[in-house]
Length: 130
Image (tube, rainbow, N blue to C red; front, top):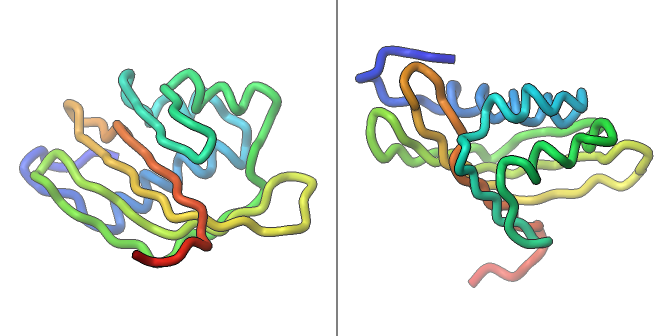
């Protein structure tokens, strides 16, 4: 997923990048997950902070997601090499019947010709809007 270095990302590109991460969670492919995360990746989750090893390490025992849907996608572009992709994720964990939902914000940055996820924050759906 590379493009001209002067062309800022569009919504379709960011969703495709994010989908690669979700597909790694579905297939249990830690290598594919790691390939899209920056070395200094920071994840902020209801359970706490996580780095690249923690994010990929969740796949040590196989897939963590059975199905998912991305909706309400939007983005903010901060330059030709950086953008935030925000969306709602509805997902089903393996062996469970109840779907879960969260809002996700993922900061993507182009490093050379490769787009990497530098930061991600998950917010469970359900709280009151301030």
